[in-house]
Image (cartoon, rainbow, N blue to C red; front, side):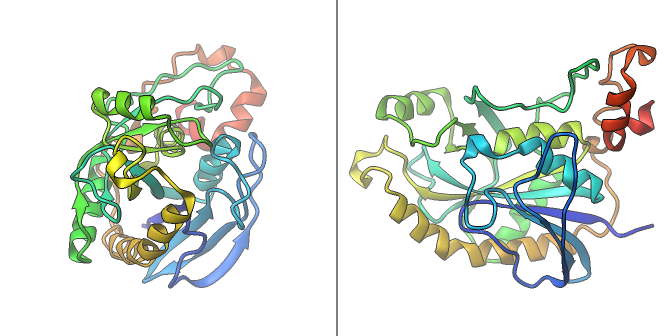
Length: 286
């Protein structure tokens, strides 16, 4: 059996993956346009890995400009079965302090301008997103984080906002009343698309600030965010290294077959071009 390929999506502050060997850059063409950047293929402690900087090298793309579909489709074409996403977030809870790590288990989508599905244009599919993050992968992330000495919160609701501006104070207070625990600008599109691609997905959310609800802590300033991120990048890389070592066996979670009964379009009516474009995703079901 071939080795499991692990994908890593680096967010703000994480633009490369330390410890990779046998490195090569790969351009991947997708039906959805160009990914954020070239994919970096390599090997981390015996585990094949594919790394992609979400915002491109040099941080060129706004959250809304990130081509999430191309990024996840590219990971699928490269054989990735599990994706670990790293994201900077604001904390909506007193107990989640800047510098803490949160592994979310739920999410709320507040975005309005982003494509969030591979389907349409003649084919309809409805996957389950009741639990948007892979439970198995998240458990491994929590274990690895604990082993590295990080202060980790093993559950939480990630609210995905449009951005690029940070929240108003009224919004921040509203999200707290909704039960959200952290706020970011990227992860939910990735989680939705990974589920459609039958890829396990888990998030390491690095808390950088208290958002603006906590006036005692001061308002969000990008300089402070980047300072906390810089302190946590090395820790995130260590956690990824530990998790990668534990992912050598096959998958037993439901993520691997999430499309099995999700495609409801009559097979004979699916356009040939769509069949060809989406073959890496739907080929085994047609």
